[in-house]
Figure: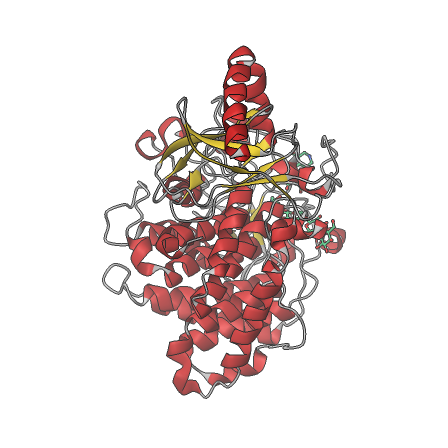
Length: 589
Ligand code: G3I
Ligand code: 9MR
């Protein structure tokens, strides 16, 4: 009774207060109420995090500009955030009706508007893949597909020089090779095999895990309508480039195709400096082998559309694997390389110092594709250590994902480690979600300060992907709920209040470190790009407003350590958002 009366009083109070101070209070609500700015599935959990509590015990869910439809009591977070402050949690999971809403907290104001709807992440899910179209090298982006972000073709890459570090008898320094297509890596215009490896794998895995759903996803790209799913069409743009990075003479794969130095913040067609393929490396060659082996089994299902491609991929994978057997420790060390070779190369390093996980990954993919048990001797199952979350330099789990998702195909291979592998992945997932609810944002990413590295948003997305893998294996819905929490994190329920995907949400990055977005003269950045996110490292020497790990972010195009975009960050976002769209009916509170 008392509570009801109080609710009413708060409501009247909030409406009066809002009218008098509309602008001020609205801003304060948008700043202090942190939630997924795209919205929520009708039957999924729905949580907002409120940073301060000016005395209200209640929150009010309101139809935009209209009446209150639901109210609840704010609950204090179990633990403080990294800065030491407790937050307040508004949980409106019990409300299921679709519509557009704001959350109101008396004395604080209104949140950004958001939707409760089926397929609420469809747009951002599609955009996270379409982003790769915008990253394409060697093709003009036509207005028809790219809208106002149309641009001239950049980097034909049909006359690429073999760098002195990569010279062989058959291909001496200065040999010209053709290596067109591919995606630009990130804010820069170079193409790196190591980073292409995990990115291409992740998108292909999205297809392997959810083929039926992904066949329905239309991206409006030049190949659309050609009888291949658009996700595969887009992935092929990079895969065909990757194939050109293998030296046909020995099977080794060049580490990268690059300018000698990062170019200016200019449009891609403005850059006409020489392009090189540099030194072959074991990491690049194994990542290539893994992706080609995976691609071979996926494209085998499309023999009419892609005659011969599956075989080409498998043969390339086998040749790469053999090269790596002969060259198991050719690490890419750019500084050392620059002591010996010229011109000096100062672009992205992707210099992994340990390639044992790359061997495991490539062997896993070759095993799944060929069913030949000989590869299992090269797989490290390491049951005694926790699984390391995937990243460009840690790919062990990518192989495990592939083995586990293809378990049915491997029943006749006498492969004994399957139950143990499944168990390890579920233990890993349980470890991820343990105590996530007591963090200040009730998310997995917020459990540890050490998650906030260069590209932290991809840590959140990769955790989400790992949880989806756990769901696929166990059908335990709890994993989906925590995966969704991390998507909520990416889209606004976080320490800065940004939705970190350009163009999606209300407060989104406007100045990513992305050369076309900086140089094209268009106010809005290219859409669908996930920025790196909070990272207190300041490796770019741009001061962030806070060094609290999950707040260490600035929307500044010079701040490449927090505000660049990259293909290996968008890929797990694409996986997470699309997988949740595919599985939305399984998520309930
Ligand atoms: O792994 C350690 C971790 O153990 C430690 O706790 C943490 C503390 O700072 O550092 C972690 O290492 C960081 C590593 O990223 C994590 O993956 C390094 O400090 C950091 O310097 C390194 O940054 C990489 C960066 O290149 C600089 O080499 C990013 O991962 C990588 O995504 C980024 O990639 C660049 C390419 O070189 C060029 N193209 C753009 C692309 C995106 O920024
Ligand atoms: O644009 C480059 C970005 O892709 C890299 O991640 C980053 C770190 O290697 O470097 C950026 O390039 C900058 C260079 O390192 C220093 N001079 C300014 C360049 C543009 O900001």
